[in-house]
Image 1 (cartoon, rainbow, N blue to C red):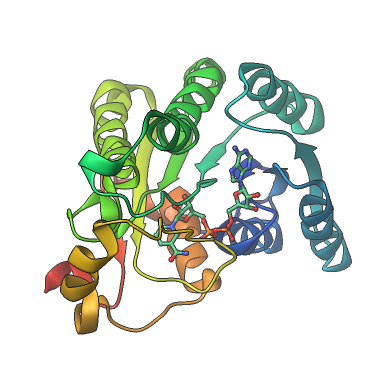
Image 2 (cartoon, rainbow, N blue to C red):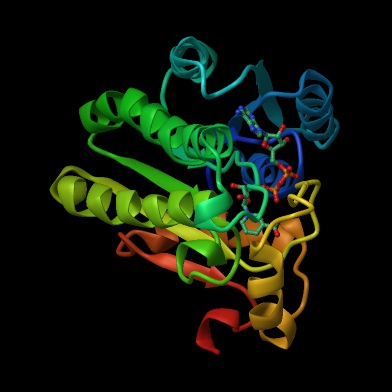
Length: 255
Ligand code: NAD
């Protein structure tokens, strides 16, 4: 096996029907992984699988809402059925908030964003951990965000969720460092994907953070550029990298 190869390995990628997740699923498959493509959207999940198969790779689709506990269990069971092992989990699926400042964030916005962006990745991680711990190896990669590093990149709910992902990444790294399971995250800057921002027309947030983002954000990246960092962190080349949050942001975090 090559240093960064994934021949024969089982990889789960959430949100793999679009954007960063689709790019990551493709890159893992090209390196020999068997990939479980998980997404809410049946059509786009199946398209990702078709693209991988057309490229000569192996992939399966699992369609469902990851905020549903039953779907979380199905993901684990389907992965074990399909490839008999789980070497890598990429917790990538996510949604934007409405750029609302804390005082204008209602319960529905808060709960939806925290449930999908923080609770669902936690629950899926908890579901696959026993398999990884029994195997004595595993790599978990989260797609955090620049909003996990600073307060000026999104609304209150998304910022809190992504900071939560950063904390979870570090806690996993500490808890399982002696048992062969690593956890890392990427923190993308702005990336050309299908993610939708439906900012509240009356939101205080965009006016405040817009003036701070400006030129600091750097260039817009491609999903493949983000995916390359995910694949690296999941690979054996990163065997000594654990608990890291890697900005993939053209230097935004350095400003
Ligand atoms: P995207 O919308 O193109 O892809 C996200 C995918 O996740 C979609 O296919 C969607 O159907 C799926 N998804 C959403 N909620 C789901 C759920 N409950 N269950 C199952 N699947 C679900 O967006 P993207 O930009 O590729 O987003 C991937 C990750 O990158 C997200 O966590 C996002 O927060 C993060 N991110 C994106 C950017 C950016 O600029 N695009 C920047 C920083 C972080």
